[in-house]
Length: 470
Image 1 (cartoon, rainbow, N blue to C red):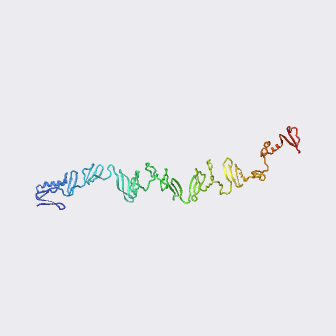
Image 2 (cartoon, rainbow, N blue to C red; image 1 turned 45 degrees about the vertical axis):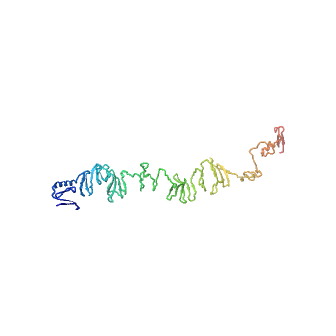
Image 3 (cartoon, rainbow, N blue to C red; image 1 turned 135 degrees about the horizontal axis):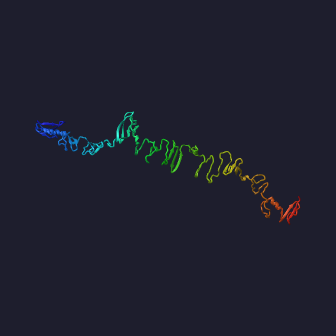
């Protein structure tokens, strides 16, 4: 009676007649009463034990049949079309040869696992070698008062450099370099770890230090603060004509237009003042009045160069010109003592005398006076002179329209020379002494007039002597 051999799924593999052997599959199938049954059965068992170990695949495999490929030292399974590796790994120091896709290889030198993609071995992990020790990201759970927190720690050479967390917490157990873990990335404080490279933005900057690590890496403390008073030792350049605005309402501005600079007080009717510290006292030597547009100068003011003032210049105190140049005033008049009650006013020239030299108007006398050392006299006008010195004594004389002067008497300092001229057109005025001397002379000889008789000692030969009655 023939045997019908079925597979697991019921499919008929073959039918074997009595006394025969069937080689439809990789093993021998025996019919009833086959004489070589014992040897063939034992060989079949050996093949099953060794999974048909050979350099070539079984010639008549069934789907699901195993074959140990002695060339690659791999177990392969028949999928109905060809033998495929069942998967496996090699633990060795060198990369396996003739691998199949999906094969794993443990590099025993570096303790790293690779998988073969069909083209090359791809590292599965860990990312660090045995010699590098723990390096890279590691998922950890840290205890805290608020419960366990899952974090991602970054290690380099078995040292934790940073912790990435979704929330801020304080670890219950000591974590070296991480007293508190912030939401985000926290660096190990014991390493002095910093971020290097370029960044597009930051929410804060550490201003606790001022030591620069290089000419291009600047400490946070060397940046000017916008939220607090700060100081810089360098020059500030504002490269825009819009300039600077100061004050909570930007009252003071410095701007540029067509290379012209404008300093402006922008608040309506408010002043622009310049103050100094004079011996601990704050003084305002210069102030621009916003409500009037006037300029107020206080104290001794020095202005260099030409100055044009449109409007009134009011000075309270002294005006001093320390140079030797002559002051030039283009106006026709200088008005002194304006707005004050009547007081003597004029010009003082500094000398070594008391009160110096003065030219002033004496309001009590209603005339101009001049002098020095506190001795002053009237400056005479033409209207102050008189033509009649007899009627207006102690007055300065002037002639009449006809050239006449009237006086009570005139005394000359000297008699003068004898009158010897016969010029009848001379207008010279003789003194009394000259007239008396002339009256005692007659012709070329002496003419003596006396009330007494002459003696022998009077006169000379040829002189005339007139005796008049007393």
